[in-house]
Image 1 (tube, rainbow, N blue to C red):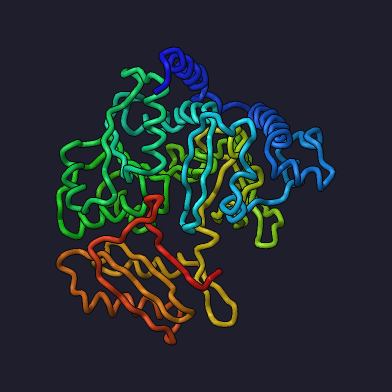
Image 2: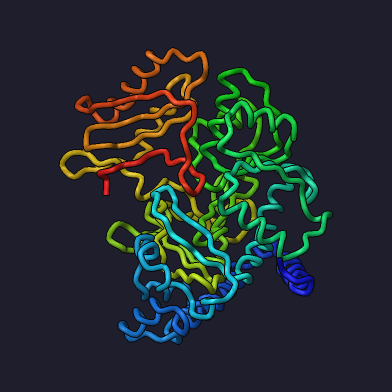
Length: 446
């Protein structure tokens, strides 16, 4: 537990930085880029002085911190993969954080690759203040900035819960600027969670997109009455388009998304237009590359590469996060000047292998499986090149024999007739260690 003096310091620190968060996204882009460039220079200097990996690669390339003046200069560094961080996390940890108090977060992503990312307190409280940008957007749906009721779909041992416990033990959050919270465990049944929603009556439901979508689909399929929040916000994993449309059109609840990762926390957010994602340029540098590592331009799909500019514990510069994105070509009409992500296209590792070395993105197959009547949630596992397993959560009155035939037909329509498919009906699909449900697992796509 932090001391009263420490709590007072971090409370004042957070309020000081939060006071301008509603204005920063509207500043002239040159001003925001100036903030980013200053943070790039500070991050590279810190990395060279204290982080073994970056000191070694910069020395090998004959680079010094003075060679990095803007975010564009970060391309001089090699692209870092999740496999490298998972294999040698100490190589990316600053020597100034060794033996000091830092919080360790666990990340597996949809790839299931286990990584430990350390954060220093300054970075975490900057992120807490940074969340005010999302609150400004939510306020347009819940009609107030503070004091609303929020229910979070999460596992009790995941990053969000860990961070919340850290904030509560290290600072004071005034009641008048806080909101009422409740946790909706993703390990409970859909029926139990719907009951909890009806009791708490939240203004906002946020959390895992896949689970929230499946929950509302279960409510619709079984005609279960469910309290309708004023907005749904997901940002941990993907929500199927069919589920988003169901929530918006049949339940009349607007759906927003944020783009978050353990490696950089708040990367981008959607505004009230609910279209593109606004990149938090002052906290993170973002680019996109093709499979050969070459930079792709706006509008083209590539794998996102990020640089966390504020964390001084685990330092990640030019880090390949694993998501496929298309950067925006023009500003959003909302008036924010932040650059945008036009499209989140899925995971770069979300691929299904085909004979002859070909691969197809998993979303091509998933969309057909998720559209089968009576299916609430699916998980597809590629066991061998032409052998697949589908786990399906279905509504109670579903004719499973017919559903199984429909799932088989959906698979064959995209992958051909020469496949072997086993379909199993299950009550729930277990999440991984991160709390996310991996929609696709391929044991031979890599």
